[in-house]
Image 1 (tube, helix red, strand yellow):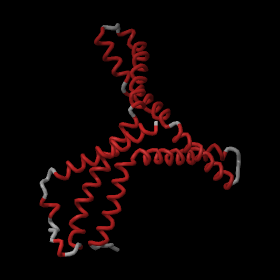
Image 2 (cartoon, helix red, strand yellow; image 1 turned 90 degrees about the vertical axis):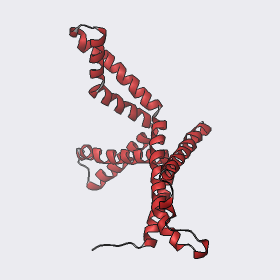
Image 3 (tube, helix red, strand yellow; image 1 turned 90 degrees about the horizontal axis):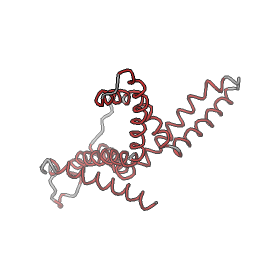
Length: 212
C-alpha cells in the first residue's frame, strides 16, 4: 500500500521539519544533552539486566531495578557529561593514535629504539591527555557549531522545498511567481544557510556567557 501526499500535506510536513531544523540551529546543545541522557538511560537499563538477574529477582523486580539504574545513568550522563567525553577521547586517542605519534616523535628526536616503548607510554599518555583536555574545553563550541550548521542548512533547504508548494496557495492578487525560489541566484540559498547557522551559534554561545 502506497501513501501519496498532496501539495498541502507536503507543505505541512516540510513546514514542521523546517521548524525542527530551526530549533536544532538555535537550541541544538539542549537537544544534544537530552540525547546523551537518553543514551545513558538506555545503556543503564540494558547493562543492568544480567547483574540484577544474578540476585534471582522477579521479573517486576528486575524491571524496576533496570528503571532505577537507567535513571542513575541518565543523571550521570547529564551531570558529568564532560567527564565521560574526556574519558572516551582519552581512551580512543591513547589506544589508536598517541602511540603512533609518540613513536614518530621518538624517531625524529633520535631516541634509541630500545626506549621506544617507555617513551611511547609516557609521550602517548601526554598526547592523549592534551587532546582530551582540548576537546573537553572546546566541547560546547564544537557541538554548537556542528548542530547550528546542520540545522541552518537543513532549514534553508526545507524552505526552498516549501515555497513552491505554499506560493500557489496565496491570493492571486499578490502576483507572486511560484517559480520565484528557483529563479533566485544559486548562491542565495547557501548564503542564507550560513547566516542562519551563524545566528544560531551566536545565540547559543552568547546565551551561555550571559548565564555565567
